[in-house]
Structure formats: C-alpha cells, structure tokens
Length: 335
Image (cartoon, rainbow, N blue to C red; front, side, top):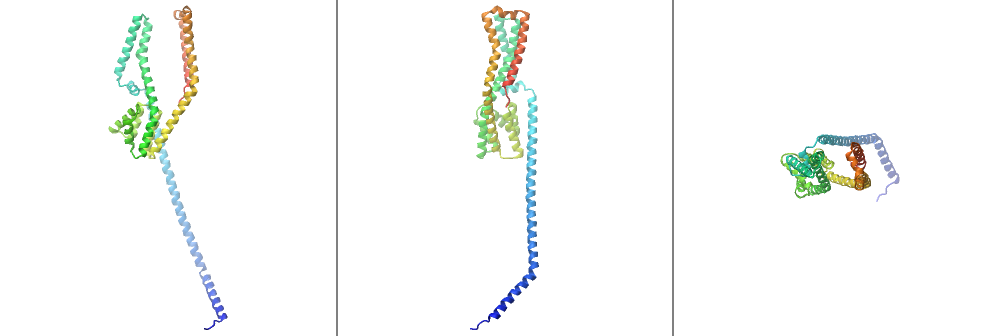
C-alpha cells in the first residue's frame, strides 16, 4: 500500500475549503435575494389571506346587520298592527268568540231582553217604585250580561295561559324529533286541551284556506288578545323571514312565559294583603250602614226620604268610587 503524504492531504482539504468559500461568496447575494423573494411572497400570501378573512368577517357583520334590521322591521310592523287592533273597539261577536260562547249576537240580545223583562215583572209584582224598576231593568239588560261575558273571557284567557307553555313544549319536542311546524300545530289542535286546542284548530283551518303559518298565528290574537300569543306570532313571523333555530326560539319563549307566570303569582301574593285591606275599607261603610239600619231604622231612613239625605248619599257614592278607583290602581300591576 502506498502511504499518503499528510502535506498533500492538507493541501487538498484547504483547496476544497477555499473553493467552497469562493462559491459561497459568489452565490451569497443570490441566496439572500431568493430568501427575500420567498419572504416577500409569504407576506403577500398572508396579506391576501388576511384580506380574505377580513372580507369574510365584514360580510358576516353585514349579514348580521341586515338580519337584525329585518327583525327590527318585523317587530315594528307587528307591534304597529297589534296596536291598531287594540285601538279598535271589539265587536260583540268577537267578545262572544273570545268567551267561547256558541251563540250569535242576536241571541245574546234576546237573552238580555228576556232577563230584563223577567226582573221587571218580578219587581212590578213586588210593588217596587218605577225608578227602581227602570234601574234594575237597565242593569239586567245591559250591564249584567256583558259583565258575565267579560268574566267568561277572563276565565278562558287564564286557562289558555296555564296550558299555552305546555303546548309550546310539545311543539319544541315535535320539531326536534323531525316533524315540521305544520304537523306540530296539528298535533296540538288534535290532542291539546281546551282552550288551546280550539285556538290552534283555528290556525290549522286558516292554513287550509290558503293562509301561511305566520299569518294564521297572527290571526290568533283576534280571538285571544294576549301578549303571550303576540310573542308567539312574532317568533313565528321572524323565523319565517330571517331563519334561525325555531325549536330553540320557541323553547326560550316557553321559558319566558313560565317566568312571567311565576312573576304574576309572586306579585299577586305580595299584593294580596293590600287587596284585602282595600276590600275591608271599601265594605266598611256599607256594613256600618246596615248595622245602624238594623238597630235604628228611623235614623237611617232619613237619608232616603229627605232631599238632603239624597245629596249626602250621592256625594258619598262619588267619593267612594274615587277611593275604590285609587286603591284598585295601587294594587293592580301590569307584568
């Protein structure tokens, strides 16, 4: 074997290192320019990507703004229509429908006239004065039947409010299980409890004659003029135009209605003491007058026989009415 001279080996290594250094020195500017070009390209790509993200974010903001504006316009339109409906005086036919009475206005007037006539005959047989007979006949013919209708409307609306959140929960579960809104409403119309069943049945009948679901739900407020029903109509109308998760929206509405019901019950419990005090104070003058009449009839009859007594009774009735109105305003709260 031939030995390698260390001097020659060192010269070869030094020559290779020198050649590499010369090559690096020659190519250094080109390498740096390539690095700068690559860095510039990366910055341009990232800037384009950022512009795309900014544009997408701007588009999302604009879409949300348009959707919010659409929702606000729908709310204003629905509130305006509801306000116009509430400003109009309800006809007797509408009040009978709200009370759930299957009679026509003509029959209602006939029943009122018969009631007034019967009481008039009874008072005539009893020998009452013509003024008393006329007053009782007017109250029995005009006031009492309408008060009964108002009482039935209030009772039916309370029953509706008790069952309405349960019906909304059924609609939510039906939609989450895959049923469309039409079938969920039909389910309530077929298997619900009164008066919710009747109101949703009217919605189904309105759809069958060509109305859309939002229009049919908006018409529900004609027979059941409640804020809760108006909320439901607004939710359906907004969802039909702006989209969104309907089951979540109706579920939130059901929760809100239950919270409103709890708040009403709480306010009623807190104001019960004030209402009891108002009833006692309002009934106290009549109780005292009755006790005085039972013990000393001549002492009380002067109020009914003397003209000055008539003036005192009239003045007292006016002040009692004012006091009852003030106490009623103090203990009644709108929620």
